[in-house]
Length: 159
Image (cartoon, rainbow, N blue to C red; front, side):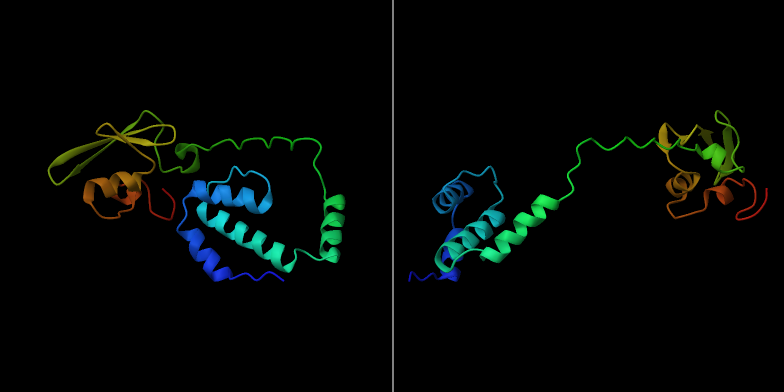
């Protein structure tokens, strides 16, 4: 019976290039592979070498795999497309915000700050932001609640 030193084989394969491993794969499995993942090739080749020396899957395991493949649910039609949810704009999701197109003005540290409310974002100095808090953080350098910073309604309560 042929013997196999798996550790030595794996160590040798780790020194091979992907091209050399692909050639080794053909040698072991008698078929080509499109795989170019070095670690995967090493594992597959090592398994193939062990299967050749010590035997592959048992007849029982092969039969069970075949049974599972036969009863596997195969989709014959593509899944129905799920309707895309309508994205709620920032304006409709929070009553504290003014209508799109409105410019929020605030004096801060001697500067006049102007933020334009858009449908689902905010424009400040030519940059777009996803939230008022992001604008406030950009201005102050620290995380700040945008509604409080721009004095829009009451935080966590009614306007």
